[in-house]
Image (tube, rainbow, N blue to C red):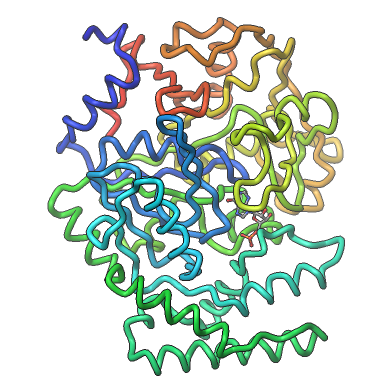
Length: 465
Ligand code: IMP
């Protein structure tokens, strides 16, 4: 089939057959904004030419959505690669795992026809376990912060990572212990957190009852647990292709995000290495995924946030699964123009080799589009985010206006099919961030992708890995 007329579906098939062996085997995929960039569907696409897809950070605070043949799969902890029958999914040591919710997620996917066995899903023995006490503490801390709350997903993420770094956590490998020993660790950990809850005047947990469901989950998960770092090293040495699936986004990173309005893990590219126990020399590419506009859930500064009709246009009504309401919490997301200052920062922090823009179709129907190319703070111009959150709160975006387009672009499959204004928008973002953009998405389905390469000789899916 000539390149010009080759559809994404066809390139996808070619990708499955052409697992290239002459490049380094790891592709890291990260969110370049505040999460919810559409990483799940991009990983799903990359998985076509991979052997392993590995999640390296976060837990069930994430919600990765993949639409496939009329079904919508919502993945919270399990990597999006699970939807490919010949791909192994790996959950890394950088994750925090709620075992009861993980068993539930596996069972939901199995009911939808997804085959999940210990041969297809590997869980690190060094990930940390989220207990019911972590969830109770997450809620208690948010309550205590009042108006200054982070706006967490209330999944116990922060308290679990706090126990990890405080060297008081329970690890997935502990599920391999003698049942009595594991039960005792759980009960002790919950009792310890009960003291915290009690001191805040809050209700405590029945440690024995809470531990019971965790013992059941341990029976289920035991065969899936192993040393992921060694597993991946051996796979990489054998020439297997690995996609590292980031969760959340660069601007929610514990070190590089707008602290303290961040999550407690490292979603950036560096986190992939520590979160899986792999070395940097295996990495070939670092791909960033960004929405064609900005969204954020929870508190913290968002310089390009909008409140009127345009925010509503971006958010949608909530009837479609791709509307801007949290996959995990259902909260409406804050929406605004594309913030190029933040994207530039993401390119720099992650060393992105390329950027993909998602949800371009949502921009259709607007007369004009704005790109925040810099900030003005106290009379000074900033091309990168300022050092403090206080300055960021005062940042006034410097906008560049671009013409919009009215056409529905959801059926476009080649860069040249897009209206000129859409092509100009993509080129301008690429130029402002100094990074190539070779792929955009124009709808939620697996094949609703526009690959620049299919009409202009740039990379196609088959060449992507
Ligand atoms: P936590 O990760 O639940 O502690 O939440 C900390 C912050 O990260 C809050 O602002 C959440 O809304 C945000 N957050 C966590 N996970 C996601 C995600 O998957 N998408 C978008 N925002 C997230």
